[in-house]
Length: 332
Image (cartoon, rainbow, N blue to C red; front, side):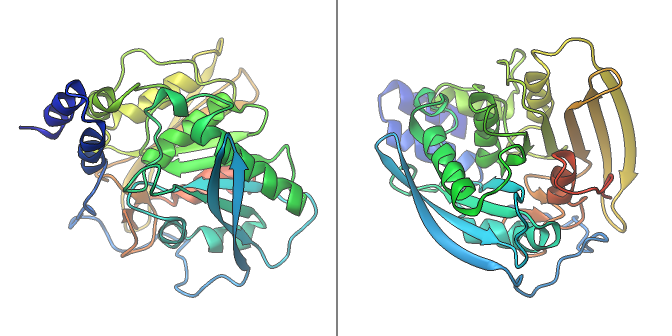
């Protein structure tokens, strides 16, 4: 019996915890192997040493709950620095995700404060954000309220720029980043969804399984926050069409847009296609990077990291550039 059919059967029997476990397996309970992935990082290769900034821990409280987080503050903290909220994927924690993406090093170079909320294992036994539950898809309750509280706590403590606060995530964390952008447009200036799913694409375990393999034909309005999606076109866990659906959701409330398409290749690595949608002659509304031949992995991440493909373009770099935290152009 397939994982999706088994999960659906369990849901119908009311065995939600067991069904969730099946969903977690489908979301990537095993670290994928990608023997064909080039192991040569691009020009933004990250050193193996620890970044010189400060790593601390904190906790935020909201909606009757508590959420722990990891915080990286760069060595030189300028007034009104940008703030990035980084949401890990399933089976990961904040430390593993920082190591996989090289977020500490990127934050040090760009002068960005990075807060990485960490899903409670009591909320999800394998550390997945519950992006598919209606109670975790609204503004003032559940996981979105907790993530927003962590964001505000750090912004207040370090005096970060309220107009330059962005959210990004991978897989289940990418799906939750889409939820945060849709529910908190007053808090975030941009969002990055890597190998994730669009806002309100599912309402329970069974529909989550379904949309992971068959992207939605219709999408909810993802709100006005500019959004960038990164996805591998060989992703067997979250189908690449979900990256396209994320963009459609981001553009749902837009009028006429201009579209541009470019292609390239990471040096010694994977080819990519970049598409960009903008208001006529103006502000970027959405961008997508399709990494050819890549599976369910963070593009441009560290070799040996949790769910990474070093042969792709540097996903964190393109996200930071899209939200205006760096002046970099297309990274490949």
